[in-house]
Image (tube, rainbow, N blue to C red; front, top):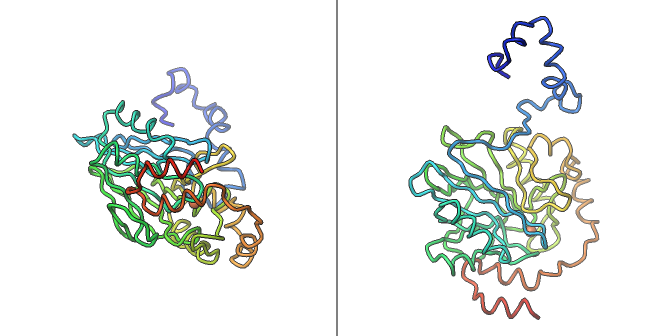
Length: 296
Ligand SMILES: [Fe+2]
């Protein structure tokens, strides 16, 4: 807090300032649980240039993220993990905000819902679909670790985070004056808030997921904001530092983690037989055929 923002009455009452400010400013950092969490932040990624919206699809509890560079004349935008059922909502919002959608991206081939990228491309032919090359899915742009997805003067960095599926990637906002601070990591199902995606199908591998999260996500600054593809408990955002302390699975050692993942006893995803074939042709699926398949 800047002292100049205090009222004259308060700024002349200096002897009382520590008492007045202590409960609000310092209690959080005196809490033992936060020790060692340098840079811990509860704030959203902020930038005067980034427009950011977190959107939700309630049937599959999926988050879709809208990012745009509103300092650029064309206001270029991208969507991460759009869902077919909420495409009209997402495109209406994009239009209301005066944005030019250029990319419809997926963090991986989803098994619990059909991606919205095919529908989006049908409605806005200039939009390009994006997914990782390692996913073996079809898209206009196939990305690999280290690639940058540019939108205006900003970009998302691609990090390979396989283990939930063989082609999972995490998209992270760039660094520098044009980018938001703290950085924002869109982790898909590799890292969920206090959990992670299952590893028992689609090329999943619990050892690989453990290594991915620890080497690619937990290596980021602790104040990096974590935005997952799903949440089932009402959480919206976390931080790397918070998950390093409180994630119920990934704070364990690798052996314990793999044991947990091998004994989850989860049922077969009900949408899997529809969603995975549709999502493997992400951005190119015949949407008419998909509707028929969904009615089976
Ligand atoms: Fe998934």
